[in-house]
Image 1 (spheres, rainbow, N blue to C red):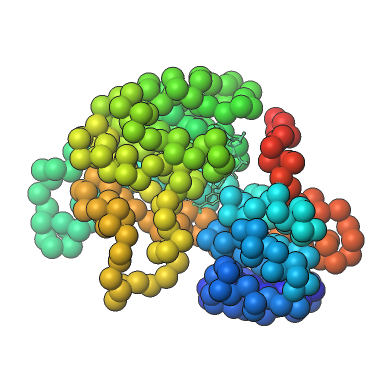
Image 2: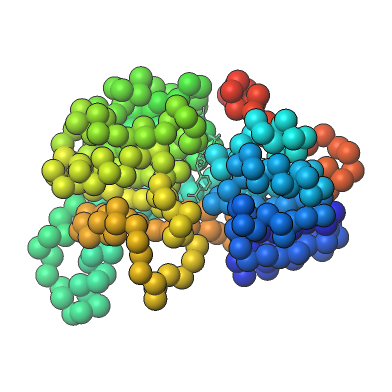
Length: 341
Ligand code: NAD
């Protein structure tokens, strides 16, 4: 199938080309993101391949459909950037990579938490300047601390398991589907309000939906335990950034580690080191000594990239052959999610 691959980075190209040896699709690599300005590049392509910050709103989808596109292949798990209702109405099939490597994201989450809590980036900056003083680097043991995991799907379950079985944390979880295997090792499911007000650390692993948008907001921060640590490797808009900044300024929030950011589409995945950043909220976040930000790299392992490439190309091979699209995502499935456990 002829495929316009938007937002291509060198590592995407390498992995897709290697995996395509087994499929023989015609891949056309495009550097820009898919949005209203770039959608014309896809004219005549039966399929487009996109990533987390491409914008597939109704207008873009309508132009894709009018140009002959029938398949949208997300090379990621999340699909909050696609108007699925519009896609369905326009006859576009949307496929994704539901689980390319939950381990990649879970391991990175634990890494971020440890780096934040034990001040590892600050320590490294000091050592590079031959400053071996320890004042200001005091952390806390993870063992015995209460950690709330919001969303215990593929990634959240691994994080919860590692924190409980590996570090000996008290782990609270919130999800509409409970995982008996986690309960068996002592993870306790509680209502989300209770999790957010009881935990010393909260880590977010639910998808971004209208219901979870700004799950961490001013009200929640006011009700949280003083010194709360927040880790977000899921989607930026789960957190109200302004409320988070206020929480950091008032010292109610004790530290934040983010791999995702509400307005990341204007920043992440590009080298902007010679540019003026106009996002004042983002720049303010970077000024706090207890904030750690990475640019949406939790997924970035060799294993994950290989799986993303293979599953994406397999999804399109299935579409071409008229086989069932096992990784299709539709508005109906999102509104009424199937039970997992
Ligand atoms: P998953 O679908 O396996 O799990 C999501 C879980 O969240 C499910 O168990 C679901 O029931 C639960 N959930 C849904 N709404 C909820 C709510 N309101 N409250 C509590 N739980 C809720 O997904 P996953 O593979 O574990 O991925 C989780 C998220 O991680 C994705 O949605 C994606 O946004 C993000 N992600 C980020 C990266 C990265 O590189 N930073 C990579 C992959 C995925």
